Amino acid sequence: MSEESPTPVKNFVQNIIDGDLKQNKNDGRVHTRFPPEPNGYLHIGHAKSICLNFGLKETYSGKCNLRFDDTNPVSEDPEYIAAIKEDILWLGFEWDNLCHASEYFDQLYDMAVRLIKKGKAYVDSLSEDEVREYRGDHNTPGKNSPYRDRSVEENLALFERMKNGDFKDGEHILRAKIDMTSGNMNLRDPLIYRIRHASHPVTGDKWCIYPLYDFTHGLSDAIEGITHSVCTLEFEDHRPLYDWFLKELEFEQPPQQIEFSKLFLSHVIVSKRNLKKLVDEGHVSGWDDPRMPTLRGLRRRGYTAAAIRELCRQVGVSKAYSVIDYSLLEDCLRADLNEKAQRRMVVLNPLKLTITNYDKNETLQAPNHPKDESMGQRDLPMSNTLWIDHDDFMEEAPKKYFRLKPGGEVRLRNSYVIKCEEVIKDEKGEVIELKCTADLDTLGKNPEGRKVKGIIHWVAADTAVPVRVNLYDRLFNDPNPGGHKEQSFLEFLNPESLNVLETCYAEPAVADAKVGEAFQFERVGYFSVDHDLGAQGNEPSHPLTFNRSVSLRDNWK
Ligand code: ATP
Ligand code: MG
Figure 1 (cartoon, rainbow, N blue to C red):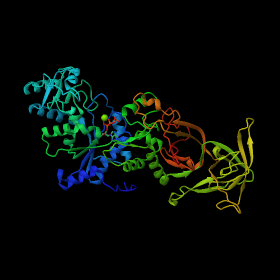
Figure 2 (cartoon, rainbow, N blue to C red):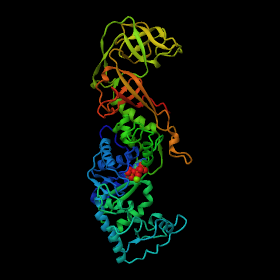
Figure 3 (cartoon, protein in one colour):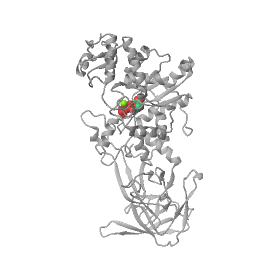
Figure 4 (cartoon, protein in one colour):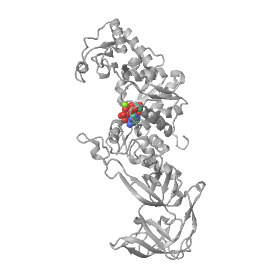
């Protein structure tokens, strides 16, 4: 990714890999993986893991697999699988191998049998509640199940019958035989297999027993030849178990688990369960609602993949817990769009302005970007009836007000200097029109003998394109909506997170803008074309809808 500056300092994961390469560990291979569970859409937190895992592949000319961790048949959905693939590609990464943990069910079953044969796994027949009770807690050691000493033969026979569907859900489980008194709860004879009479999206009805995460994860890593299995910190306590399975099953080049801290962003929530709740309860329009911190929500909002990658680069990789301010993400987007987005003039809150001494209909020219000539120019039709923004006029203005005021002068951006001669109001006293004169000697040059400080944007009324604008704001008012014990995150929803402006006017150069295309509306902010479609799904429900991606400046700081 050439547009980003290289990471100046290596992160701790790279330091570990450098050390491994020095010793020629894994024959000098670097192979990572990104292992989402297909039970929801990817969010900004996942982006950090994706950038890290695929970034290591790029740095070390290694490989990175995309592995769907699809061991839980009930929560998975092919819709999520398709969306996850699409979002990773959009973010700018390509996997070397596309894998599903479910592909390994045969191998995993054989490995479980090997553990049983070594006397390292047994079939337990305690109820779920009893299992919990026997496990103890952090202060109390666990105690052995009365079934722990079943013979290898009995275990093999029972496990096979579990596989064959002879038992009901929950009747038996397969457990690793480690240590019921271990200080690490994960080592108190963890579950390896459970019975689930459920159809799986990939394997269908072939299996009625399914392996558990801890067993599946490390062994899938080993099967795929992963060298560095990078995951988030909550798995640190699981590492002894990860290593135990690899050791007992005697892998020659076992993968190494390395933990880093999750990305937490202020003013959002990034737990799939809670994001799903927002969707299911209708607080947002869907997973791709432009206020959602999902990758598709961000994309629809106008976030670029480059901005998200840049955030991840700036945040870095460490083991320290930290919450990143949402404004950092916004800054990354501004920096990217400032360079890439063409400029347009769009009036959000229209006020009519007539120029009494202008009767030409010129087509003026305006640069598409103030600093990048290669982006070319656009036609900008001028006329004697314009729309300007209500906010750019003030009747009783302070001295330092440089926009339009009665008797004041202002430059119309890319056009003439005008002077406000008359303010017209309706019967309620609301300003409905400004009558102005233009200094026709000011096109492309300064007025004679005086300085005009203000510049405002405008759109010629007869050629204006009506557009709808969605002004998005943060979804939550609270910096940590998910962090309140007594209150649900739903209580912190920002009631003003969406403000729809139905009648805005844009200059004609926006007319053929494409879905997703980003613009800077001069003096206003960055906007991108929404993919809003009509009820039939093929007709735009409005000529053009723009989403505000981010304002020009940070209004929150
Ligand atoms: P959630 O809690 O949102 O459901 P998850 O961790 O269950 O997320 P997975 O599908 O299991 O989601 O995650 C795939 C990978 O993404 C895992 O390796 C996980 O550690 C990583 N990941 C998830 N959330 C974050 C985050 N906030 N920051 C960095 N990595 C994350
Ligand atoms: Mg998960």
